[in-house]
Amino acid sequence: MLQNAPSFHVSLAQSEDDIRAAQRLRYDVFVAELGGGGAGVDHTLRLETDCFDSHADHLLLRDTRHPETDTDGVVGVYRLMTQDHAAGAGRFYSASEFDLSLLQHSGRPLLELGRTCLHRDHRGGAGMMALWQGLADYVAARDIEILFGTASFHGTDLTQLRQPISHLHTAYLAPPKLRVTSRMPQSEPILSPERIDKKAAMRATPALIKAYLKLGGTIGQGVFVDHAFNTTDVCLILETSQLDSAALRRAPRRGS
Image 1 (spheres, helix red, strand yellow):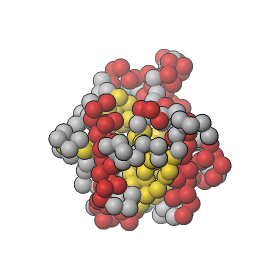
Image 2 (spheres, one colour):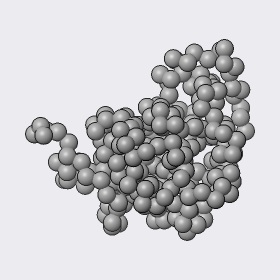
Image 3 (cartoon, helix red, strand yellow):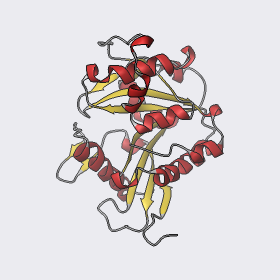
Image 4 (cartoon, helix red, strand yellow):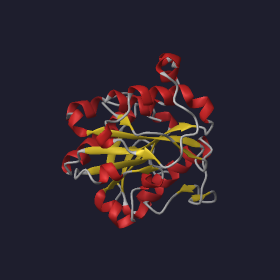
């Protein structure tokens, strides 16, 4: 191993200090870097929090070379919510943006992926791959069949996002039995296929969304504009039957 190469360790949060480290990383990425806000943002302590944190599991990626950082070495985070977690919290986080009835009535084990972020220095292949290795183990241990959660485009101007959003809806729409729908009325019409520049649309699609699509992911119907976070959200849906452990460990190679 090169002397300066990252040395990663993935584990579930075991303490309040672990969760605080995750919330500090979330502040650094979602608030300081991307301009998000909301009631759970504490600018004094530099924390991004919400009421779901105490009910969820938090999968942490640490760079063990730098445990002295203000995030205790945490450079990547997944917040994971099973159906039991959602029952304790009263709902899944993304239920405020999308009608999840089809998923919740499917009778299949669900896992919501949320608050996914990586430190800007670790958005290459190795960090995201290590985090996905931990996620693969978590999924296998709980026999999860469907992964889902919101994923974001930066910004809230739908006219600027019509090309990538239209492309997702024409090429990657979930099958009807899994097609959750946005709770926000669609204000911008989806472009017809002949008006979509596919290459430009994919260039404008965040790397994390593209990575899920490469694994067989699909999206629900519509988008939700989250003004507090300065994002436009889609609901990603991925059946684990599309995957094997090797595929999970190979991808995605980039995160956002």
